[in-house]
Length: 469
Image (tube, rainbow, N blue to C red; front, side, top):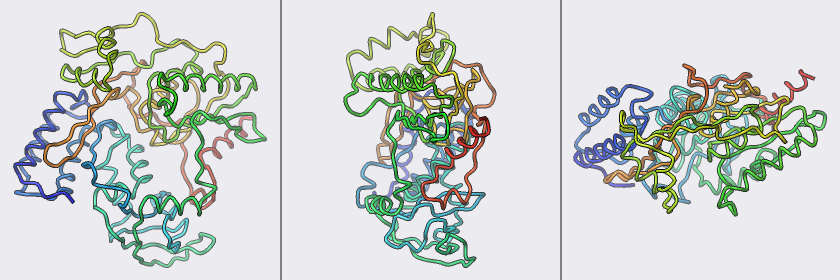
């Protein structure tokens, strides 16, 4: 564990962070007043003791960063704080109606089986722990949209628990036991659960849950059901393919192949599964929209950045084309001092006339659907295309602070903050509410948890299609 920090070192770190945010970050005070941020910063500094342990300082900095309510502005631990030998609580958890259950058990001890209700960890109720982590880790969650924070912190609960409380060899849990049929016995028991490395957990998950641990490739197509006229297009990311796609052409080519097949088969129902799609390339989100929207469009109407952010923007990543492209497409606003994208004479994308889809469309999303995924959902909502099924995505309807990022390292603690450099406004009609509420909300049941291989989201969409037949 890193050494404790002196009062002077902590003050230096806060001052360094504040300077970088004021210079680079375009969203300072957007979801709250600038004064509220400054008051909290000053209060934080005034209350710093003579010394603090590293993790305690982390807990002081987290609320300052999270006060901006920006899912792209992220606080990370210092480098090498974890490694392959770091151990974690070996459970994947799910919540139903305010109760928390073991979904996967990744340890050698299988006593707490699937469907076991977990009540406390080290004497703290699960609901309180979940709320604590959701309040202090906001990656993928904009504004006051709760779904992003709640989904991500529960889905990766062991990692977030470690980040806040530190690593433990074992943890005392209380739980309600279940029988072999996952029926609660009513008995409340306690047990020390031995922490496991990620590698060990993954090995147990593969053995115990083969029906659940399956990964569909990005942009893969599959029939919804042999009895239904439709397909599922899995879009797990809008990033370019990791291998052999330097110019980002593979995504566009594969998408065209998919929609050509959909057109040839004349499928009447298309489900686009974007659950836990954290975003990626703006261009790729536009390519997908070109098959779905009937009118020409631009993903964003305008993009702005602070003068101090220009240099890191054009040098991240470093290439000779980026500076030239920037100054050809941006100008300095003499009134505000901001750099803005030039006004376009025409829209960036046209509808794909040959393979455009105009039949029944369902968008399957969850709280971890973010960034470029929200760009897609914002435009579809704006033009009244498709039905959004699931829960509200973590991002805001109007746009976000994103594009490129500068990761800074605080000089004494080593804490890292990823700062987005641009404000990006979706080219959609304005709405007061930043949250994209689903047309068809979806709630998990206990039966969904204990049934191996059950995709409750897709099962719900199937039921909708059957109703419409």
